[in-house]
Length: 170
Image 1: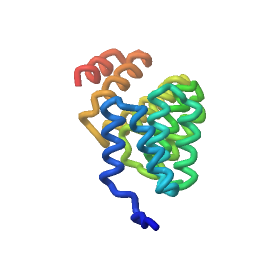
Image 2 (image 1 turned 180 degrees about the horizontal axis):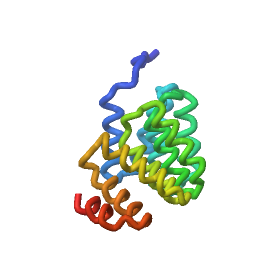
Image 3 (image 1 turned 135 degrees about the horizontal axis):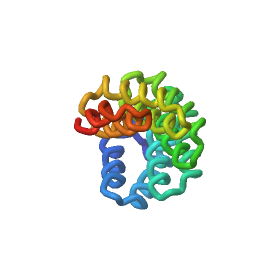
Image 4 (image 1 turned 60 degrees about the vertical axis):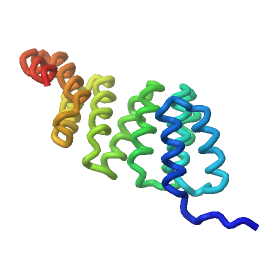
């Protein structure tokens, strides 16, 4: 009889994340799949699986894994954000906005989610709301280059060219 540790060791999570980060997506999927067999109740493993499938552009499968992670851990802000990004890639902008809102309700200082929400709102033609989202991202993380760029685009689209130029320069 083997006895497994009750908690998933961080080193194993880090190993899978390293594989993913280094572009070894199939190896990461194989590793995370093995870990799910031993730790079926660890939401992070389903979130990582979702990220792997999203990288392979298997977006419907990614959605299922993110939804499983959220079902297991409803306050998992990263999984809500990742689900929203995937909805956005699928062109489901209303669903993306809802998921970003859920991520931000859980983690109100989530600059990346504010920036991503702005992108989705911009895609829905809600430029003023997008502008506010980018500004919130920058209030949290003033050196966030992507949010400065997106803010500049929104300002340009609103005809505020001087303000747009200042944002692009940051």
